[in-house]
View 1 (cartoon, rainbow, N blue to C red):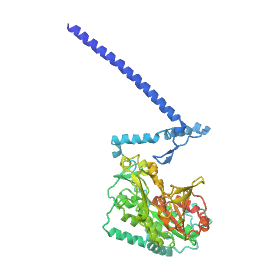
View 2 (tube, rainbow, N blue to C red):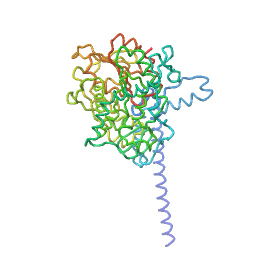
View 3 (cartoon, helix red, strand yellow):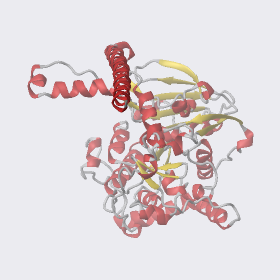
View 4 (cartoon, rainbow, N blue to C red):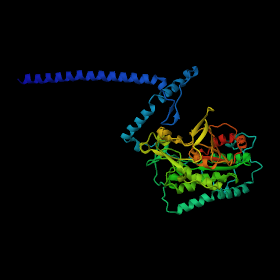
Length: 496
């Protein structure tokens, strides 16, 4: 009896296992079939050239191009390496997959502990004592613009001696920024809320994040500052008799919103001292518009985006006020103009931090104020085509990463704005990078003719342009990260 029961149990177990093995095999076949179908679908999707993106909106860059077949490339293997890079870099739905990957990392807590790069104490040059510097030299007319990067700039006959230059430059810088300094000191002593961040941020990717804010570290480079000042002095010597030359070096959020202790702990440099050094090397006749102290006095306000490296239109407004003081005109108040807000902006810091959820979950709002005289402009793109476009466009329908394009159609080589409400013949030329985009609308109601050049893409002759258009004011506007020898050479090349 016991043997029969034992055999019965063994038979039941055998049947159970046999049944489950058959079931397991069915599932294995289904898994295999699903894998093959999925692999085939994704393989076919990957071969569809029409679906392959050419740019990444998430990472804001141009993706790899399909390599050209060559015997040498096949022989040394470069062709196959480039082919693999192209295939993975331009795979359809790549941005969506990166976002999913980022969210999975967030679920597993990877984002909170991962550090991608640290600041180096030796990355920045020491900022020289401005009491011992002389004016940056003027590049010889017969020299190429690139000479400012090679240390070959020579002083012109218009330059003063080193001692005289230092003395004159200091007085000019003090005079040009006195109103800004006075206003900043008053604001600093007032009861206005201090927005300085005193917490050391965590390093994530190529940016530093604290709370819901991103920052990139600023490192002073003396060669870059010298080259930039030399470029300004050279432009002044070539066209300075015809117009007023203003220079505005704009600090980034790193210098305005983080405390000095935090900046030093991250290995960064003082942007205030860096700007002062560059200004002290400029010709006394250059009108330096100092905005650093003013921005710091308002750093509890929304001056810089959290998820992007640009300043906001409000930050540009305070710089515009300082420009008006330097020019001797009355600035508009924000209440004088119509405000438009475009929420949902997620900028460069989000992409550079591997889509940090701290930034992605706290998108910015692009604020814009529309000029009174006109909101119409004409721009010429890099292909030479001209278009009419709003100065401040309705960005409510723009994608989340493109809402900063609300201002002057983004980075275009050349733009013209003619204000029909002004008939005094006043004219201004502004040379800028992308920080200038939200600054331009504030100038519209002060000039009959406003010309905007993005020197990174323009290739005309501005010496002739200034003369032909009877330009009265020329404004150079660059953020501290754009004060480089390469950028200086670009600008100087436009003034042959």
